[in-house]
Figure 1: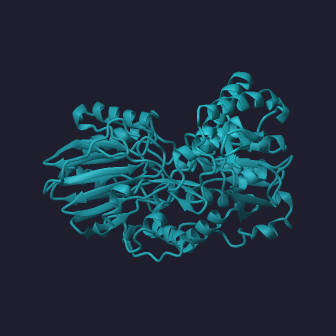
Figure 2: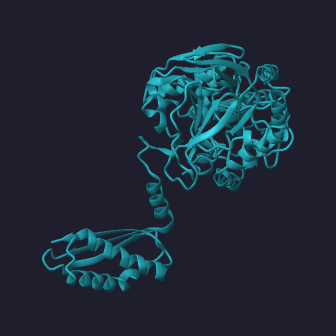
Figure 3: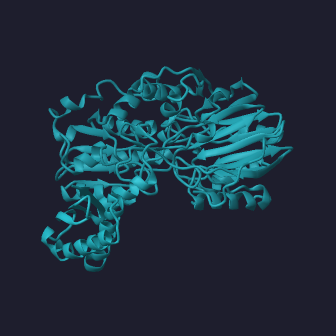
Length: 558
């Protein structure tokens, strides 16, 4: 929860309001709302993946609460690229209002539409490309090519009478990109000449000095690892990382191997990428994974999901021997992706599990099998010098990334008072070249848990953690409704304790004595008696067993 919550004033005419609903102080659920002249424009609508302290949660959405009552004012949703942390929450927003126009590049919209189809939502879409301009309500949008770890990524310049905002989305400045599509610094310079009043810039690698290595440096390493692999090769990557999959296909083909896609999202996304011409597959290289088992072990590469240690993804299931493909001695597993903060333990567990099975695990810690898709400090400095923006608001990153990015801006001469370190829900107004914080909304996490959205609370997750870490105790007592005298019990059952239930024999007289004392004081309410039971056994368990379990007392009248 933000530390300093206060409502913004009514929006003045001629002022542009900017509210990030996600993506600040975290890696994921990127979403920013722009308001001008009574209309709303949204840029990105992504998900955040849960960490270990959020058991049972499938996805975490941005908090839509500030715009729920104003969905009729939304003139469009711009999607900068097709990664889950920028498009994953689109189905959940469109369930609130299905006809919000989606604006994005060809590949981005194709990936979104496939996702929406699974949710039975038919979207209204507008396909755009770099260099294109579109008037959407009071917003004049200009799209700029940027290089990222997925094709067809776009930055968007938002022109209004209040000024111009440039939102980069995720980007880097690879000078020899695999698809030949550079970040368009000439367009950046042109925007800078006309003046950028507020620069919303990707911060993910702002604390990494120098420049992000070239994507094409990965290809020879993958080729070398696959050439030396004696048996099967399993490569795990993000299911939307088209460039990485292309490199794996090229390396497999060069070494006389065929490629089988594993994981529903991998199959879906790569089918789309190939159909649209973003993925180039030589004839005869792809094979259905069910037929792949008939090939010799040294003639197959499996391309799978699960590079972040997700428990239900293909790679984790392999490590747990819960998949048709069981890695073993001689197999090579390549984790060709970044390590998203918060996923470290899960990834290392998968690496350990695969290593224990005898597989040779190759990852970014021991080989150059991944480069980031985000601009490092040197690239960001170039952007600041080219654009010379009046105001900067770092986005897309944890707090340390935002601070590092703001420091880079200040190093290039942007005044500290013009660099805004915001949180999710920070309200920023732009007018006359001046950007200032005018409010802080109280936003929370919206959890997707199975079929429920937003019903699981932080208190529920706390209960789950307690159940998982401290155990569970139930206490059943039957009392006489008239006198409060104990008729049966207390009967105690525990789960998640090393000790036998007989260990609780010592506390049963204490519970009985506490209930008798309460009854003599005239307490008859079963809820009050339940609280007596909870306090008594809670104190005892804490002192005797050094545990704080979940305690569920049940006092029944007879």
